[in-house]
Image 1: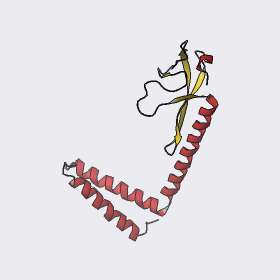
Image 2: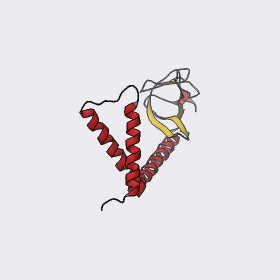
Image 3: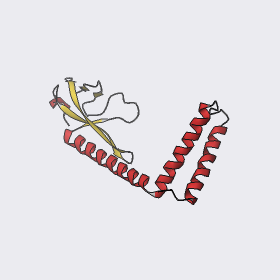
Image 4: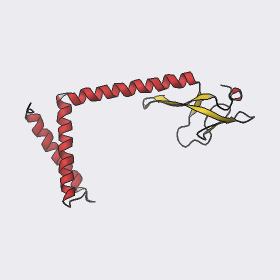
Length: 148
Protein backbone atom coordinates (compact mmCIF):
# COMPACT_ATOMS: atom_id res chain seq x y z
CA UNK A 1 0.00 0.00 0.00
CA UNK A 2 1.39 3.37 -1.01
CA UNK A 3 0.42 5.79 1.74
CA UNK A 4 1.59 8.78 -0.33
CA UNK A 5 -1.46 8.28 -2.57
CA UNK A 6 -3.85 8.84 0.35
CA UNK A 7 -5.50 12.21 0.84
CA UNK A 8 -7.23 13.75 3.87
CA UNK A 9 -10.84 12.58 3.99
CA UNK A 10 -10.14 9.20 2.32
CA UNK A 11 -11.53 6.09 3.97
CA UNK A 12 -8.97 3.44 4.97
CA UNK A 13 -9.22 0.06 6.65
CA UNK A 14 -7.49 -0.61 9.96
CA UNK A 15 -6.78 -4.31 10.52
CA UNK A 16 -6.47 -5.56 14.12
CA UNK A 17 -6.48 -9.38 13.96
CA UNK A 18 -8.05 -12.41 12.32
CA UNK A 19 -7.11 -15.52 14.28
CA UNK A 20 -8.35 -17.82 17.05
CA UNK A 21 -9.42 -14.76 19.09
CA UNK A 22 -11.80 -13.81 16.32
CA UNK A 23 -11.61 -11.09 13.73
CA UNK A 24 -11.52 -7.33 14.08
CA UNK A 25 -11.12 -4.44 11.67
CA UNK A 26 -12.58 -0.96 11.34
CA UNK A 27 -12.86 1.65 8.63
CA UNK A 28 -11.54 5.09 9.54
CA UNK A 29 -10.93 8.42 7.85
CA UNK A 30 -7.51 9.84 7.01
CA UNK A 31 -6.80 13.16 8.75
CA UNK A 32 -3.46 13.99 7.16
CA UNK A 33 -0.54 12.45 5.29
CA UNK A 34 3.01 13.77 5.75
CA UNK A 35 5.41 14.18 2.81
CA UNK A 36 7.28 11.08 4.07
CA UNK A 37 4.08 8.98 3.97
CA UNK A 38 3.20 8.95 7.67
CA UNK A 39 -0.59 8.72 7.95
CA UNK A 40 -2.58 10.25 10.81
CA UNK A 41 -6.19 9.14 11.19
CA UNK A 42 -9.07 11.19 12.63
CA UNK A 43 -8.77 9.05 15.80
CA UNK A 44 -5.20 10.34 16.25
CA UNK A 45 -3.50 7.03 15.51
CA UNK A 46 -0.39 7.34 13.35
CA UNK A 47 0.97 4.84 10.83
CA UNK A 48 4.30 4.50 9.07
CA UNK A 49 4.62 4.66 5.31
CA UNK A 50 4.52 0.83 5.33
CA UNK A 51 1.16 0.86 7.14
CA UNK A 52 2.18 -0.28 10.64
CA UNK A 53 1.02 1.55 13.75
CA UNK A 54 3.50 3.92 15.39
CA UNK A 55 3.95 3.50 19.15
CA UNK A 56 1.60 0.56 19.55
CA UNK A 57 1.18 -0.86 23.03
CA UNK A 58 0.62 -4.59 22.63
CA UNK A 59 -0.49 -5.89 19.24
CA UNK A 60 0.00 -3.26 16.55
CA UNK A 61 -2.68 -2.50 13.96
CA UNK A 62 -2.11 -2.21 10.22
CA UNK A 63 -3.59 -0.19 7.41
CA UNK A 64 -5.45 -2.17 4.77
CA UNK A 65 -7.92 -1.61 1.98
CA UNK A 66 -11.52 -0.85 2.85
CA UNK A 67 -12.56 -4.05 1.02
CA UNK A 68 -10.34 -6.21 3.25
CA UNK A 69 -11.57 -4.39 6.36
CA UNK A 70 -15.20 -4.88 5.28
CA UNK A 71 -14.59 -8.61 4.71
CA UNK A 72 -13.07 -8.95 8.21
CA UNK A 73 -15.96 -6.97 9.75
CA UNK A 74 -18.49 -9.27 8.03
CA UNK A 75 -16.58 -12.36 9.19
CA UNK A 76 -16.61 -11.06 12.78
CA UNK A 77 -20.35 -10.40 12.55
CA UNK A 78 -20.96 -13.94 11.26
CA UNK A 79 -18.94 -15.41 14.13
CA UNK A 80 -20.85 -13.28 16.63
CA UNK A 81 -24.18 -14.38 15.18
CA UNK A 82 -23.11 -18.04 15.21
CA UNK A 83 -22.03 -17.85 18.86
CA UNK A 84 -25.29 -16.11 19.75
CA UNK A 85 -27.31 -18.86 18.04
CA UNK A 86 -25.28 -21.56 19.80
CA UNK A 87 -25.86 -19.83 23.16
CA UNK A 88 -29.60 -19.56 22.52
CA UNK A 89 -29.71 -23.25 21.59
CA UNK A 90 -27.76 -24.12 24.75
CA UNK A 91 -30.08 -22.06 26.97
CA UNK A 92 -33.10 -23.76 25.35
CA UNK A 93 -31.63 -27.22 26.05
CA UNK A 94 -32.42 -29.01 29.33
CA UNK A 95 -28.86 -28.74 30.64
CA UNK A 96 -28.71 -25.07 29.70
CA UNK A 97 -31.92 -24.42 31.60
CA UNK A 98 -30.52 -26.33 34.60
CA UNK A 99 -27.29 -24.32 34.59
CA UNK A 100 -29.18 -21.03 34.20
CA UNK A 101 -31.56 -21.95 37.04
CA UNK A 102 -28.65 -22.91 39.30
CA UNK A 103 -26.75 -19.70 38.54
CA UNK A 104 -29.85 -17.58 39.19
CA UNK A 105 -30.54 -19.38 42.48
CA UNK A 106 -26.94 -18.91 43.67
CA UNK A 107 -27.04 -15.21 42.75
CA UNK A 108 -30.30 -14.78 44.65
CA UNK A 109 -28.91 -16.54 47.73
CA UNK A 110 -25.72 -14.44 47.75
CA UNK A 111 -27.74 -11.22 47.23
CA UNK A 112 -29.99 -12.14 50.16
CA UNK A 113 -26.95 -12.75 52.40
CA UNK A 114 -25.39 -9.47 51.27
CA UNK A 115 -28.65 -7.61 51.90
CA UNK A 116 -28.64 -8.72 55.53
CA UNK A 117 -24.99 -7.96 56.21
CA UNK A 118 -22.97 -11.00 55.17
CA UNK A 119 -20.53 -9.84 52.54
CA UNK A 120 -17.75 -11.61 50.66
CA UNK A 121 -14.92 -12.06 53.12
CA UNK A 122 -11.17 -11.93 52.60
CA UNK A 123 -10.66 -15.56 53.61
CA UNK A 124 -12.71 -16.82 50.66
CA UNK A 125 -15.36 -18.56 52.76
CA UNK A 126 -18.17 -16.87 50.82
CA UNK A 127 -16.71 -18.09 47.51
CA UNK A 128 -16.46 -21.63 48.83
CA UNK A 129 -20.03 -21.46 50.11
CA UNK A 130 -21.19 -20.10 46.74
CA UNK A 131 -19.59 -23.10 45.03
CA UNK A 132 -21.20 -25.53 47.49
CA UNK A 133 -24.64 -23.94 47.00
CA UNK A 134 -24.21 -24.22 43.23
CA UNK A 135 -23.30 -27.93 43.50
CA UNK A 136 -26.33 -28.64 45.71
CA UNK A 137 -28.70 -26.85 43.36
CA UNK A 138 -27.22 -28.50 40.24
CA UNK A 139 -27.59 -31.91 41.91
CA UNK A 140 -31.22 -31.14 42.76
CA UNK A 141 -32.18 -29.92 39.28
CA UNK A 142 -30.46 -32.88 37.63
CA UNK A 143 -32.40 -35.35 39.82
CA UNK A 144 -35.81 -33.68 39.45
CA UNK A 145 -37.75 -32.70 36.36
CA UNK A 146 -39.05 -29.13 36.04
CA UNK A 147 -42.74 -28.47 36.52
CA UNK A 148 -44.34 -27.50 33.23
